Structure formats: C-alpha cells, structure tokens
Image (cartoon, rainbow, N blue to C red):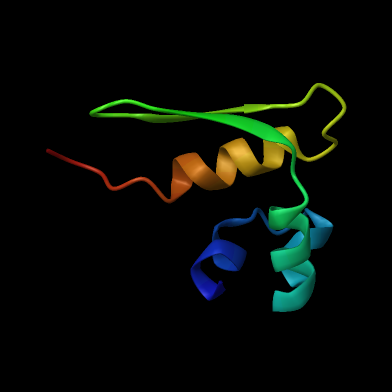
Length: 66
C-alpha cells in the first residue's frame, strides 16, 4: 500500500490518505477485468470519478524494461 500511495501524484487528495481509505477506494471501484497471456486490462465504469487517477497509478507501477 505504501508503494501505491507513493505512486499517486502529490496534488491528488489520495496521496496523503491513510491506508484504510486507499483500500476502501480500491475495493469499491466497479470495473471489468480482462486477462490475456501478456496483459491485464481493467475497464472502469463510466461514472468512476477516479478512473484516470488509478490508470496513472497502474501505469507507474508497471515494471520497465524487457
């Protein structure tokens, strides 16, 4: 959870929230998960207010390089 919180950009209010708040926000997101051999895709629901934030966090947590 510390890594996830560190990946959130500092201007966002979730960047300074406690772990319980982050966990509740992550668990309450409605989305469809599609898993293939090389990729996991998450399709967020249209009214999700933090979809862009979580997309950015997920992309910043991806490993770099081959």
